[in-house]
Image (cartoon, rainbow, N blue to C red; front, top):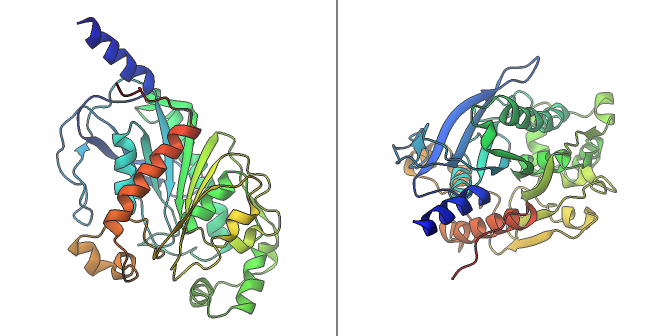
Length: 331
């Protein structure tokens, strides 16, 4: 009996959870003057799995499951252009199963239903604010807020989400550099998309974008877009640890590795052999593959399922190290 109480005490102190499914719930966070931000939340749970909240994503979670006692680190996820909160559901679930609370944002103006601000400066000014507003909500209004350790907050971002979290971590993005880049490389995918959306740089784009959030302690960035906008010293203010993932065969973002050279401290850098731009997204089921084939395709010879198993282990280990999470020693 004494050993049982000791084990329960360790679980409470470490923010780990007893056996059960990953909990899940939908919520919305206020964004003053704008539409509320739609968010998805994964967390450790003692409840049994009840199914998936969306037929397009093969999740087996405890919808509105019970949240166990303890203080858990918080990870905020920012998706890529045209995406949504569930894009990296498998990474979120892996983190939740490891004892983290994870909240993913569907960014207003740049999601699969609404791309009214996509490929504009406004989008990259709005997105970091969204992240901070969601942190405010999770710490202040979410019913499970007492289960969050406010001193252990990390960010995860893919593509435009990678740019987003770099700005939140202290980066300064000079969006006017994107205009010069597109003049020199008009065939670039992002430049083509910007022209199709009617996005052109102007006087309003001259103001650099800066939205640092001091609550952030560690950042994972995958295939970050618009790295050129951080030149020459836009990432000099980032002092938190960064894990950087770059695909060797990324067909959409060609300058992501530039982030590695601009950070003041070398990141935990991973070059993914044969990895394309969407390697970090959850594997697709048939419904999603038919609805969004582009995000489901990978370069020849790349096994997304196998890659993601190692990716999840590395991401969890990085956050555990840099958010100072102690795990019990194996006997």
